[in-house]
Image (cartoon, rainbow, N blue to C red; front, side, top):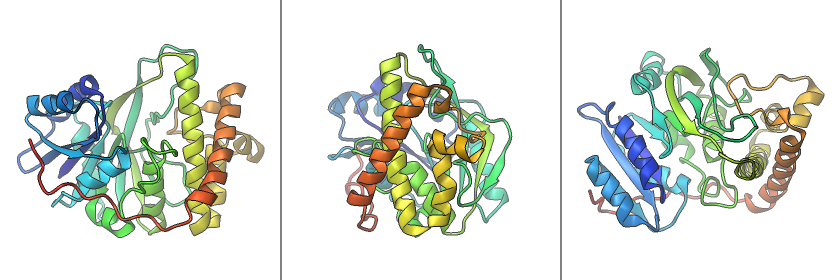
Length: 304
């Protein structure tokens, strides 16, 4: 398989991620670090060289661009994505890809994301820590994200990869991964949440950083809903209560058991998330009208 690690200007975090991921790489696997226009380019290259992995350098920032450039270099049936801040546990990779080998109908498998650190009083963000595996269809709560995700290369090709208008490095600062999963599910390929594939994700250390993340995730969720509304309004109606706490309470719908963000625990977080989602939805209707742009291709040379 091919493992893609997008990164930008976090050499220490990348070092820790690669220290764990390289322990899982087997003969025949490929590990690619895709640097999306780091200002500290040499520091990122030094970390990649330290771990003996291939580094691909892009001149334009964007996590979705980096992921697209990485998977398009793959000549394997499965591509695994892991973020440059994630620390993987023992057995992570086998647990993540085994369901794809067992069920040829699955389009992707998302792993368990547990919180690391977090010095503020609010609940963790962007974690998926429910202990029970589950299979998901279009409209089901999001099973995970690209922090730890295995996708069939054929599924990536079929839907055109990540939408580069979304994700870190863009105004819609997240949700490029959830949008990808939406499109794979809408294409008729089910997905799976696999808690045995464990990894940890750092949490905000102060309340201001936490609020900024909630606002960003809200904007991105609104953009995701705007894109869904153009393709399948039934699925949009199912997804909307999952990202808007007020709608969830009004509908009596329980929160996603695999989603640890639980912004609705705090009225302030719920208000920030709802305002961000509404802002992102309106902006998405205006800015995301065109079809998904072609995915970024990596340079012809990939220096080590």
